[in-house]
Every structure is written in C-alpha cells, then in structure tokens.
Length: 166
Image (cartoon, rainbow, N blue to C red; front, side, top):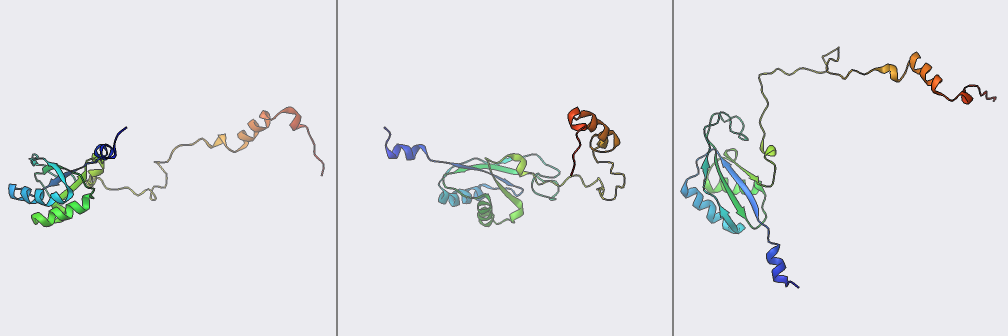
C-alpha cells in the first residue's frame, strides 16, 4: 500500500502557459520574469522565440506588421492568465495590449480574436423581402387540400363511416 507522501507526490499538477509579446523580451526582462515567477514555483521557462514579420499578428488586434516573441512557462501553483499578464506587464513596463498569456490546455482556436474581412459589406437579412437565404420547404405535406385528401385516404375504413350523435 502506498503512503500518503507517495500519493501527494504523484498528484502534483503543473500549469503550462504561453507568453506572446509584440515587444522584444530581452535577457534582462527574462531574468525579471523568472525571479517574479518563483512565487508560483516555476518549473521551467523556455527561451523566447521570434516569429517572422506578420501583417496582423494573431490576437493583437490592429497593430500593423510586427514580429511576435513567444516563450512557454510551466508553474506548479495555479494562476489565471489575466493575473500573469498583468504582473508581467508591470514587471517589464509595457502596455497590457502588447502581451498575451494563454493557458496551454486551451485550444488555439480560442486564442483567435481576429476580425473577419472588412472588405465585404454586410447584408441586412431583414431588408431581403424574398428571403433568399431561407430554406425552401414544401408546405403541401402539412396542410391544404392535397394533405386532407391523403389524410382521409390513410384513415382506417371503420372510422370513416362511424357516425356520432350528440
């Protein structure tokens, strides 16, 4: 039988986050972040990687062409991405919109906050009098003379001839 210490050692969780920034993260900034993350019992932090120049970096809104600096970190104590983002922005002295921190367990689709193409002019559904986008439905199956004739023919013969007196 396992001891309590063994169960606790096996149940240790780690929380992985990805830091993305459009500001360059220098070695001095990395040292500051690492020393601050000690309060979360940081296990590891990868070196920052720089992406190629992107016309619209994903998740940063309309900042124009920019490179994105990415580093991954793993901590043992639970924390929210928003709290980490606020603390890291305060540490390195950059605006909140220039850094994004996401939980690695989230789907990357959730990281997208891109605005769809603004080139297409939106169409008003209410202004379409013909309902061109509406599904075409054959209503003769649900009401009308043809429906009533089919319904009467489908009834058992005993019920058609029964007369009820009130």
